Length: 71
Image (cartoon, rainbow, N blue to C red; front, side, top):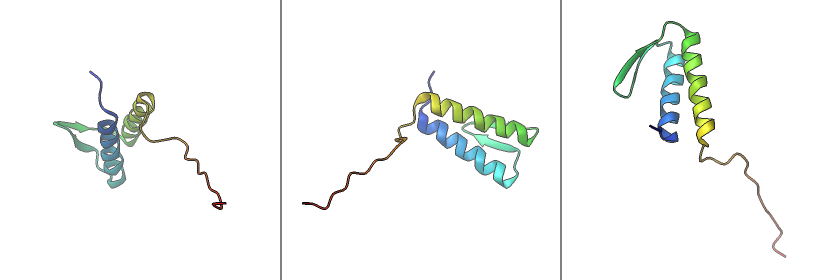
């Protein structure tokens, strides 16, 4: 069962916000998850980052501009 990249990004953002607030128990979807330490939350965020990178984010890695004076 593959999880959509946007859902992975949403889960990661929720974990980052919970970590920033110092909350160890969080609701992710229909499940409640309680982490024992900050390092466990950091590991979960790193895992989500790896999954997002492996799925190939729809955002471009490089943006290049082509400009001219119009002549």
